Amino acid sequence: MESHDDPVGKSALAKVGRRIIPFLCLLYIFNIIDRANVGFARLTMTRDVGLSDAVIDWGYGLFYLGYLVFEVPSNLLLRRLGARLWISRIMVSWGLVSMFTMAVTDPWTYYGARVLLGIAEAGFFPGIIFYLTAWFPDARRARVIALFMLAIPAANVVGNPVSGAIMDGFHGVFGLAGWKWLFLLEGLPSVALGFIVLLLLPDRPRDARWLTPDEQAWLEAEVEREAGRRALAGGKNHIAALADLRVWLLIGLYFSVAVGTNATGAYLPKLVKGYFEPMLLGMARTGDAAEAGLLWKVGVLSALPHLSSVAAMMLVSRVSDRLRMRSLMVALSLAVGGIGWLMAWRIADPWCALAGLCLAQAGMMAVLPVFWALPSLFLGGAAAAAGIALINSVANIGGIFAPRVIGEYGLGPMVAVMAWGVMLALASITLVERRGAARKGGE
Image (spheres, rainbow, N blue to C red):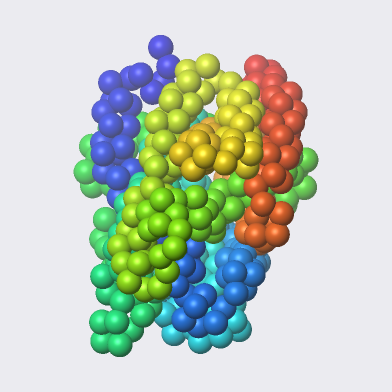
């Protein structure tokens, strides 16, 4: 019987799952909304401020400059100062920067706001992934990460219609454009939640008063046991992580996902609007009157690809945990994503193109919880904090130019990006999973 099937362990994990995961999901929902709502704001922001689509695309990508520079230091500070304090700081600062984006007046203020948002947010996602290693054993990791990362489709399923409704319903209130209200109203909850983190989020099992002493001891012992195993696999310190070829293989693999998901984040509402606007409004109708209610409809249709990814994430993560075949599941998911991009690229019918976007998003999102179970196979302690942050920050360089790829070359390159990811996922079967299993067997 595995250690996490012990009655005390099962009780502890169930409590942690109920107490921590839903709250972390809520935090991540607003993280995603505040990062990606510029994709919706662009539908009228370009006209009101005089920003071109190219400017919006570059600003969307410049967000990752702050990520690249501050991600690893931020995650190391989280490990030193504690998750509760550091995640609270991150949320308050990114919420304020998101709200202040309503004040942009030209390309340079827009670029500055996006870079500042990346700096403010740096460390949040890899910090949460590292934080979860203190609460859940490796065998549960993909399912737990999948539950946490359901926040991504949830944010878009809820956020896209809400964003459209805000821009439709608040346009002109107190003389402010709808996109200004969008940044203001969607940034406020992040600031409030940042203070709530200080009250609700414990740093480690021994700080969780809702666990019994036996449950606290079981979780602490399990974490120590697995940290020791990862240290034997080579993950001892942050310098070792930065030089580990397996980390750089995972960076190349995650790069393909970063390009694809950031492309949909920046362009999905615009793509859907282009597919369905003639159907919704009629080819000859133009102007503000014809656009009344259009953005809400675009938001509803844009939610469908994200909704389809929910089932894909849960299914693939469960199969991955059961079979322990992480890299193969990543490769299969990226192959499905490539087929979806091919459909959206080559099929003219709007509903078939939307079905392709649903398939592409489902395939790419199914990768995420499985992928983030891979680094913990060989990294632990400071190496895990640094390695996870390095993977997330460097791979997300793809987010800098992903919107411009679609803007200039269309959807075709996305098919090639998915194929690149499939090849690296297959390579990681031997270089990451089998090597880690061999080391574990030799303990």
